Image (tube, rainbow, N blue to C red; front, side, top):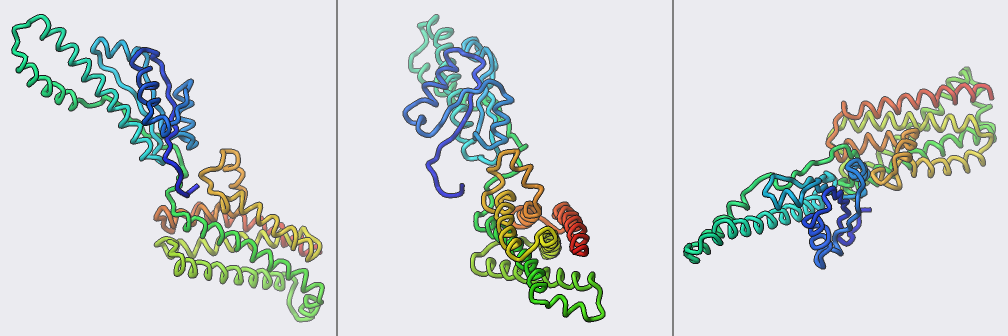
Length: 360
């Protein structure tokens, strides 16, 4: 998704005209030997289809040829071809815009020369041919200065692009995934301490079960926090990953992420019955969450249904928050929505998990 590939441009054409000049654009220009290997053309049935495909990243641009375009050109009437461009593919959309604009300009030039010849030169053969040769470049130059030959409309509904540096993206995705693994590993020790009777020995002290469980969760959270900080420092120094300029934003997002994953591990520990179960289920869920959240495959290539499903995982909200900091220059305030969702998930996970563990 980030590696170099042959430069191809996917476009859709909505031809409402069907005249000779519109066919010339599609067959002789886009279908020419110079462009046919670079431009992939698909016929569209509506403007809505073009906009939807642009928003989904399927095409770089859409070309809409209005009805009566050919007749308007023949009759010297004002007419425009509309080009819709994907702002995430500005270079490709710009190429299509320039091709259409050049084609339209050339058509207007030729029509002007023919019309001038028929209306001025042919009726009056007394005009000096040398004067005609001098005037034609002047006329063509004036035509070239005409504006609005092509209307370009940028579609801005698209949310995710691949402008982010791949190393930055995957550093975030893997850090969040390892955070889930770390908290799951900590949850396994709850069963281990019961098996080796450490938990029973701790209960001989004058502390409540809630204090013991709280201390255990705090320990898991601190280990996960330390691991996350190590990943940040290591990727910054070795791979030059940009984690953003907002130190408060990074700190609060890390803490909220740790809380959410610690809560999830507590919930997981409450619904499993042994070390083996949590050791098998935990990593499997971690891999599933890692994929759903975009940690393994960027969310900007997800279909809509998978994009919605991924928002039910804490990983997705953590990744979204860190991407805001690393790629969009986000601040403490900009990541508050993600932090709020992580805290909400943490509260739900902890509530269910602690209530179940107290019953055991």
